[in-house]
Image (cartoon, rainbow, N blue to C red; front, side, top):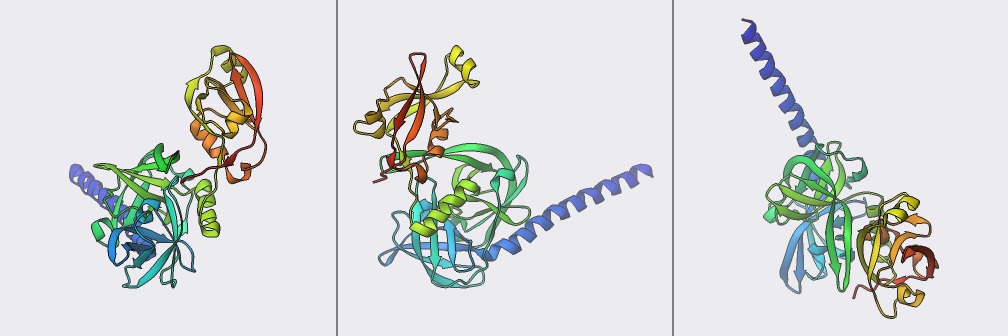
Length: 323
């Protein structure tokens, strides 16, 4: 008798848990589904690609992946789950963050709420909404399987690492790119960008850095970045230097581009860059984060360790040319 009651209670608990999970997913899907567009990119008169996009403002701005629209043509059609179909134009695309902003000719869908990926935790429920293989409004659910991943991006001769990429096991397929990765409260915390394998999808996080990029794309149609002209990689600091600085890694300069700000300032191969304007630098990603628009044309103090001795080099970054 007791075993039967315990069995019934266990089934009831499991059913309630499943129902709670289902309620979250269905609520998120109902709330965000109307804000996610199926994008069709046209080159001249022919379709040259497709993907997904998310309406982020009431006046028709959409956020998507840069690789969905770059090289595919300037004319985009955005269709929504309610049957609306409108033309959209590319306002700006930034391949080094794999983000692009479009604007619909008319605002026909509700704006999604942007969240903050910085608050995500591994194991947290997330929902992916997009248009895999053209199947509009498709919903998959899973968890955040890892945080802090890195994804290389390239634009012409320029390369950059996209930081803090979200890894999820929510199923992603071609066509999901540019779609929404949403938390259990219905907030967009990522823009789906890549299918890295079975059960392995990646999303560009929505965070403070992303918001600045999106604002720049909406305002100027492009993102300006500072450039000093080195190639380098992270390496351990010598023990004595590490002890004095209180950290164990820096950027080793592998190559200095001729005629660059670094070349003019006298930086050399094998120099170890440990700081910029007093801020610590442990790897190339740290340096990239610091090379913002505000540093273009402004004097910058680069802290260097050369042959075991500390020195500061003054240089003036130029704007990164992505041609």
